[in-house]
Image 1 (spheres, rainbow, N blue to C red):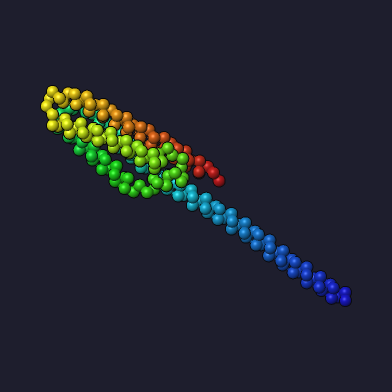
Image 2 (image 1 turned 45 degrees about the horizontal axis):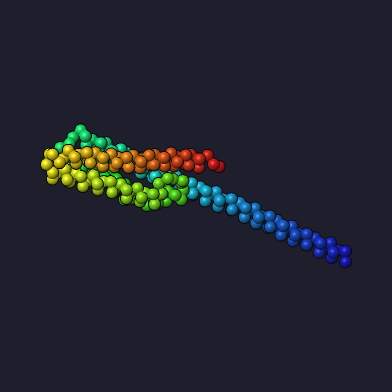
Length: 198
């Protein structure tokens, strides 16, 4: 009986060793896979964040340059008051806006901005600012059209209205420019921070 007991204890200890070994291997494998998955998820998130950040940086800087050019065109009204020069400025502004429209055509990535970054220009805020800009722009267009169809005596009063409308529009564009600049700083800081994290 002693031999059977020794064989039985030996078999159970071997079985326990195998089970313990398999259990430990399984646990180590589980935690290793979990760590790899988390690491891969973090890397994928960071890569997507960088892609969106680079796109936002590009779009914002291009938009800022276009807004500055628009502001310069609109502020040029005082240097040239003839209908011909106003028409030229309108054409130049239209060219600038066409370029901005091309940039915004691939704007789906901008919609993802709030997933990855804390930005001031959310989609709702962009729509709000666009609506206000359109109203101000339409006011400028209305005065421009009236300037084309009035005599010289009436045109002086309209030029004053035109100046106020242009000033308001430039102020709106400057506000958008400043918000874009703030968002660029936030994006840059967030991207720098994401590369500092392990």
